[in-house]
Length: 137
Image 1: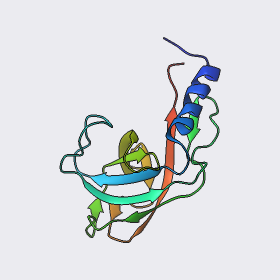
Image 2: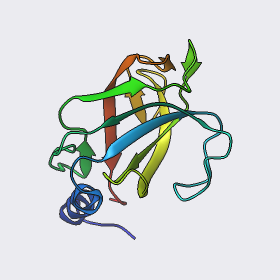
Image 3: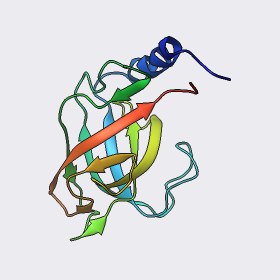
Image 4: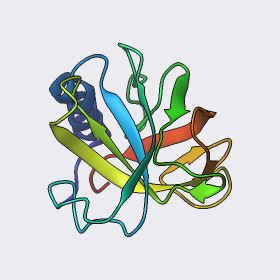
């Protein structure tokens, strides 16, 4: 199936509407689970942060990108130089997960990229890029 850009933009707008304002993003090390509902297994929480209340820009040309500054803080599971491999975004309740993807330093090919993928406890991490492309054109 193929969708118009208008429909794809509407689908993308539903992401923020469904997850809500002030969701959390968490960065983990370890094997990326099969999907967002799968157990984290032995993955270790490296960093987390609350996203701004308007965390996604308005969709345009069937793409939606992060809005505002996304700043995370290294957690106690992070050792010096522990590398993040994937992220999850959950609702503000901290337990309802909606999105999972790969994580890397900017230029490393992750679906979410940051200024530093090597995370230490209490370190501040800035997410540089995150975007979603909607449906089939």
